[in-house]
Image 1 (cartoon, rainbow, N blue to C red):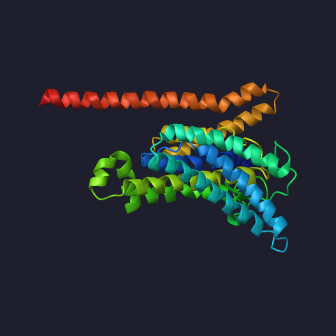
Image 2 (cartoon, rainbow, N blue to C red):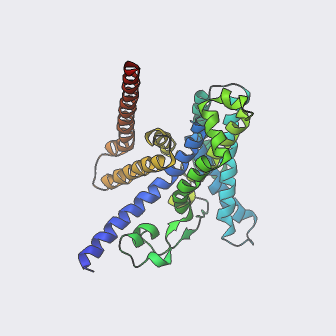
Amino acid sequence: MSTEFIVWGTFFGSLIAAILRASAPIILAAFGGLISDLAGSINIALEGIMLVAAFFGVIASAYSAIWFPGVPLWVHPWVGCLAGLISGVGIAGLLAVFHLELGADIIVSGVGINILASGLTVFLLVSITGDKGSTATLTSYALPSLHIPFVDGIPFFGTALNGDGFLGHNVVVYAALLATPMLSLLLYRTRFGLRLRAVGENPDAALAAGVSVKRLQYAALLFSGLLAGLGGIFLSMGYLTLFQADMTGGRGFLALAAVFLGGRRPLGTLVAAVVFGASTVFAAQLGSYNVPSQIVFMIPPILTIVALLFFNIRQKRRVNRRIARAASVLRQA
């Protein structure tokens, strides 16, 4: 095996590893948005859920170490992870109550929760740490990384699957990749998935068939909060090891775009989320070449707009082809 092949394999492997790390929170949040959308209750509050989960994950892990110093160190990040997941599900539950019980518009409620999360996390950050920028004054804990030993010697794959270092990727990165087949199995191979999709397609018909529409929509929104919360936790306890104000940086909105760009299917959503993750890596690389920061920050949203534009054009062409086929059948009849 030539040295040049190994060098290029390592380079592209490192690039893929960086894209996987950047894509993991978007993938998880996008899958949460996909589940809620298929149930007919699109979760616009993904951004706020990620932000709240990221905040409470760091705070809970830091204070568990302060309050329980005798506990083994590996416990504290998992305490933070649990707290972040609970907070994410709680915010999603709040959205569900507003929409399903109080009759509020889910889009308006989701936007309100996003605004609330942005302000609330900064307020609590200042109240707890005295700093409105980050939790740098607290001892931060990271979720563990997982190393796959049997791929180390394989060019490209060894670096891509284990990252640049010996420790490997964070466990949440592998969870995001495994979520695709697991979600496909849930949606298309279980009774729950069948009923969930039926509720989203025609809630009246599902209700007539004896399906509890409200219960399934509650479950979908809470599940979306769980997945988006895990994505937020990765940002503050995996991608970084602290919380920063508004650290989600629009990833929740990128996740929503990935749902529709991916055709509302798990595999398509995964591909779209990875594309958006790659755009953030590309933007970060441009930032190291003294490119103006305004241009760097514009890249992910511009890519989102262009992708959704092509998706809309493709959908219109598909509808026009169906109309043309139907008209052809009617003429032949």
